Length: 160
Image 1 (cartoon, rainbow, N blue to C red):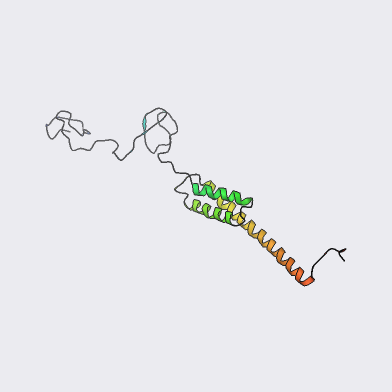
Image 2: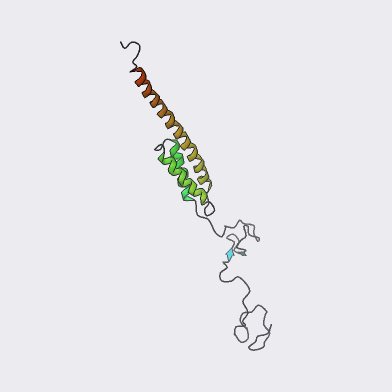
């Protein structure tokens, strides 16, 4: 192309004339300011920002955007593990269930989502276990109360 100010021939991709120093009005070729340049940490050469492996040396590249860890899902997992050993019968597994469900619902924004899923499953199983156990205990207490009312106090065979 030719500079529109001085008429000298300049490269087609020049943004500034090398003879007169005036802008050519052409946009420079290369990454725009909004594009971030990415370099291989192993060989130092520029690579495509979306590349997973460096085409020059074969080294694995770090992803451009790392997702934060799913802390809510991990908290739900920890509470569900605590609930297995009887943490406040219903409160801990219920809170673990809620936190794990929130973690699973937000899994696209975070990494380490397996903890949220595992916490959800463990919380459900633990909550069902505690519900059944409390129901059996309550049934035994109610049965014992009714037996005491209908049959009177039961003492051993040698009590009289």
